[in-house]
Image 1 (cartoon, rainbow, N blue to C red):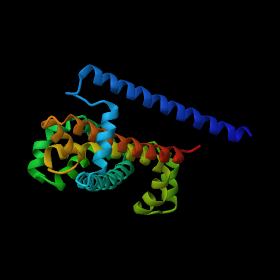
Image 2: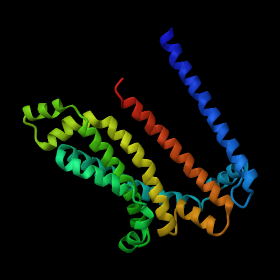
Image 3: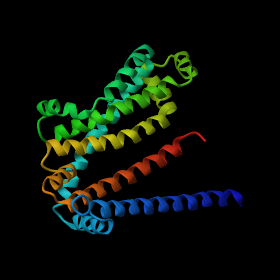
Image 4: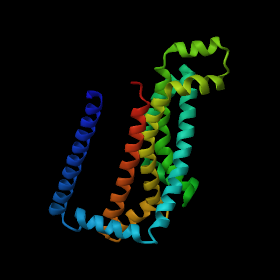
Length: 254
């Protein structure tokens, strides 16, 4: 009996905590509107109404499609390149020890300083948005994967050498299953920052997309547009991150 009651109680408490947090955030949002006024932000109820109108509008979905396309490409490139480089650097301990602090230092550089160069190289359009997303997302995935391989028990690699596995076989049959939970954690972080990079790229290098709608709303002083699109992006990011967090927890050892 207790084995079924305890998980239900935890789920109930978790739902109550989530509801309380949502109410607190809505209260803070309403307080910010009361303080700053309609020139800076719209109140929650008005924002939800405007967002619902955007969702019902046919002209809104091409912007969503443009953002999702760029985001899908950027996330795919970041994930594949990040995991591959992380595994490669992890297998080569000296190269990993040298690369890790360099990558961490490079990631602290404000990405806005790279935007003029990225625009010159990739121009305006899809390629620039994808590039902006990749430079945000690939490094955290590399670092998470590299850290997972470095902390892996040496017995795994010794077993692979004993079985005379090739490097590719060692990666596919030994390393990937062993470090998969940490890789999922890295992908969860990479997901968020890649989306951020794509949105910022759309603000600088696109005439279509959710980021373009946000910056266009700011430049035209359309506060309702800016607040509503920002809300929709946040809701999407929170929902996707919650799904990835659930997957991350399911994959962690008990």
